Length: 528
Image 1 (cartoon, rainbow, N blue to C red):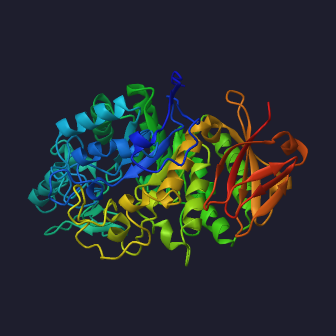
Image 2: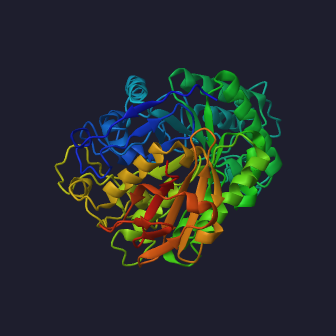
Image 3: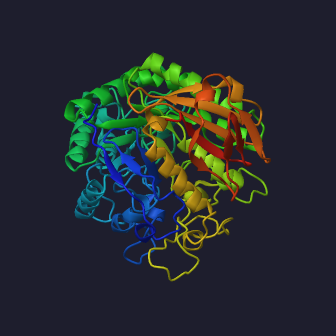
């Protein structure tokens, strides 16, 4: 594990530029490891620095105070792909070692990394290695070569090495597309403009090694690996083996390189990808409109499930990799935004659901705009709408968003307005992040559900940490005030050290009776 560096930063109203909802005496603890609190950014829609309506790296750098300790308190940024690409989303890469001109230059990127480093923020890049763009020079060269072959001639990677980079076939197999003007086909499981790489090719592996070296040399802390289940479609064993190779190679280049994989599958399946030795795998079990978080907030699953599922999954992941770091998230760029999960919500459920994600162990991920309760559903473009900085169309930094995005009104106010409201979604998220960062055991501790506090409408669980001490979290997921009786081991936890409330109600404790307002959260410690 990396050397732990502790330092304390006091958040102030002057520095944050918004309502200070944290207690003045509380502090953020920053630790140089991978149990971080991450902010996912779609650069295209985040902040525009040059007035062309498209977000860019300079715009992201301008908003680091908003993202980091002077603002929300995130200490990691994950950007969606920033490489040259013919699409707005940039998952179809034309060049893995450059910046898309819409986003800026390598100089802009180096400046961003440097500024992030100064602020204690690390940066991870989204790296799609399952496929490239059909406009990538590797694929263009391979197709040109196949088109040039005489009828009946057999292709050879000795004649054109890029023939080995992709999966070509003379047969129109499922998931394959035709090379126009030929009888050749190529694997393209997503769309024809994204040909799948041949990840069994030593030449491709050599290219990927150089790509890892390039970006690690430029100061990135790691990578998010897209579409891990598609490395070898229908063959999980081979996909895990390739992921194991990639993880080992990344750690060989830089032992501190962090990798998180997207394995969009059921929990039992994505847990198996920890066998690769990868640091993290996204925890889909808790995410989305049908995930555990939304279900317990909506009341379609008992509140107790939140605590017991965390406890059980930690054991599951550890059985595959004892050094795993969970990667909980609530929404992302492929999912409908959470403000649409709760009908007629005044912000209460949107708030507490975000907090449930931030109370989970590992490195917690928050999609940009969730801290404002932004809307967005249906086609992908709608889920990647412009960051809602202001209602003023002349506000510097506003983006136009993807060209095919529908135009719709947001459910909650812009950041400019929410900053002024101490009970806004924004200020709630800010406090929730602050609590997570102030108690290292939230991210790093072992979860143990407290059965006596768990019911259909409430739950309690310990975060156990030999290094940082133990805490008890108690959550009321009902629309009414709720009293919890602290019994058994819980009777020792009689000091309210933090509380997170969706309204102006306050929690209180008398002896072993803990009263928590509707949709309230309490952090308890043993009284010294």
